[in-house]
Image 1 (cartoon, rainbow, N blue to C red):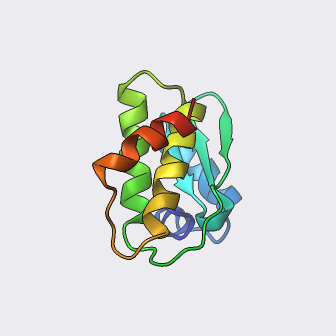
Image 2: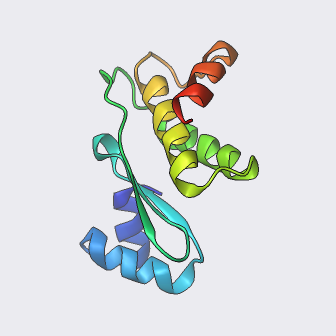
Length: 115
């Protein structure tokens, strides 16, 4: 989820309070932070996911792209950090163009970025 959604779900005002609440109910989670990247909790520790800097043209689909790429990475055996790099890169590419699309031709570059 994103930061606003985490705060709303936890019924709190700050990210720190939301994280405490989420830790009580989830074994693992990721909170996206827009241009500040993301924070991933693997059940033991937090991983700061750095943003990939791009000129954002259209943010529609950014969260879905992040989630899809992150989950893809986990299913392929990537750890949280590597899956986070893939997700950050993928969502950055989606917001740098008009419309929420990630072309198949972009997949190789995304996977190469997370290595």
